[in-house]
Amino acid sequence: MSSKLNIKTGDTVMVMTGELGKDKGQTGKVIKVFPDKQRVIVSGRRMMVRHVKPRQQGQEGGRIEKEGTIHVSNLMLVCPHCKRPVRVGHTFIEKDGKQVKVRFCRKCKKNID
Image (tube, rainbow, N blue to C red; front, side, top):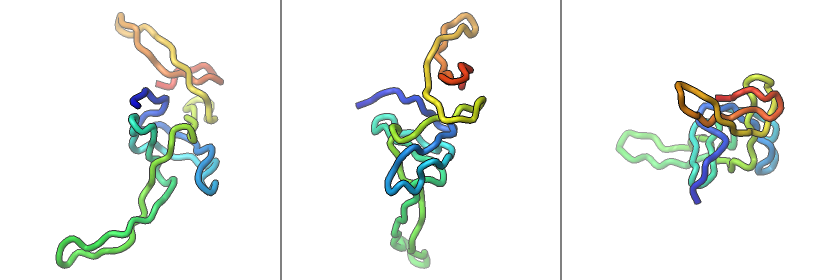
């Protein structure tokens, strides 16, 4: 199920809901987007512990904390202009004689891209 997402790498997002609610209301930057799975990785959110075995002689094993994925329905984009979590709209603007699709904030009506 491939689809376009309203969230891109580098965007600031707010976690609206999630497991146990510990990340609810927290913001972070999007590190990676998986559009086929409709999931994203947000820096510092949904931390998981990975148990790693030593793979080579002299290498240490242990526990590594890293970010897990979050479904896009649990996130809202934070508008860079009004600094609030907002719904995203799409519109076309004229750029170099071509129609370009851009995202805009539904609250302050300014372009995000």
